[in-house]
Length: 170
Image (cartoon, rainbow, N blue to C red; front, side, top):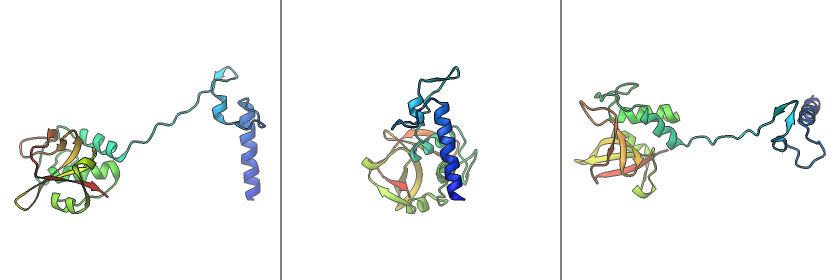
């Protein structure tokens, strides 16, 4: 049965190659060889695959889409957020990863990285009084996306303190 399927696939590939004007004897007879050739009045174009977006690009695209959404204490989206609700929502939507609910729990769920190793999409944890009090998404260039607080909305801002550390979601 398997041999019949393979033979059928080979016959189909040979027929396709011949229809495109590709010699089955040519050592480089591929669909790429047909680029620019005409077949029955139609131009055969080479298909180029676009690279898939990186995790950081997906995270950044998702957080930018939340710009302007109002801050709401305890808000987890999709249209109102507090800081950890925003990071939790963005990571779930962009990557399928589940982050814990609070900023301090999210800090424990990431791998600590240096500022020099931080890339857009990594998390930035703000510390004071012995613990983490805020979390944001690193945008690069000393900026973050975050849900800043009551009466404000999701926005991009400069990092305002040196009491931070970076984390990468595993």
